[in-house]
Amino acid sequence: MKPIRYNGINHLAMVTRDMDATIRFWRDLLGMPLVVAMGRPGYRHYFFSISGTDAIAFFEWPDAAPVDEKDHGVPVRGPVVFDHVSFSLEGADDLWELKARLEAAGFWASEVIDHGFIWSLYSFDPNGIPIEFSYPLPDVDVRRRPRLVDPHPSAVTLEGPDPVGHVWPHPGTPIPEDEKRVYPGEGEKLKDPRALWKR
Image 1 (cartoon, helix red, strand yellow):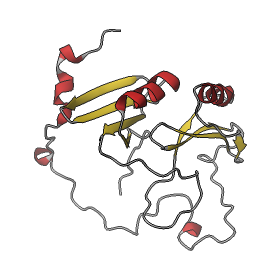
Image 2 (cartoon, one colour; image 1 turned 120 degrees about the vertical axis):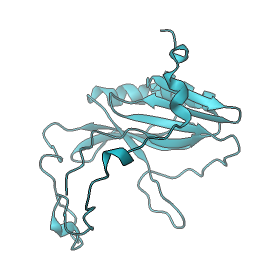
Image 3 (tube, one colour; image 1 turned 180 degrees about the vertical axis):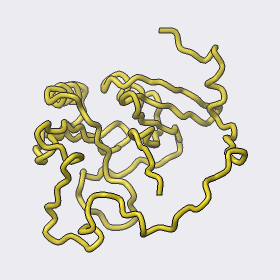
């Protein structure tokens, strides 16, 4: 199969009951620019830029129930699909800068933890979303040199770090060019030059 070329997480889609509090936290406290603000009565969908290729987005659903606080990485019983999200940082000093900002603003921030390949700081956003900030240690590049330290790996794990091509059916004939259609969505409004913020 032809390899798929990923270049990051385009966006994570989260939920907020209060977009203004979310903007204050993500844009103003964490410093992530608000790059898309779209909506209509009863609906908002806003995107904050993490890096040149990655973003985090929020749907504002005022009737959503608040979540119970869930500690990062601690197992739970019952329905669950998400634990936490980690944001990569350029430098180790960014961890302490974020810790100082979060604590000054009244948010809980953990100590900095050494995970062997990253140093991490943990917190929660105003929506109760568990977040982590991670500084990748330059001398332990797990993407170039993956590590296996699980003492009881499954047989599938033991197949190695690289994709195994024979486990899924081959897609066969590529989709013909005349069948590749893109349908309009909410973002059509973004093409209007009047939509630009003045900087």
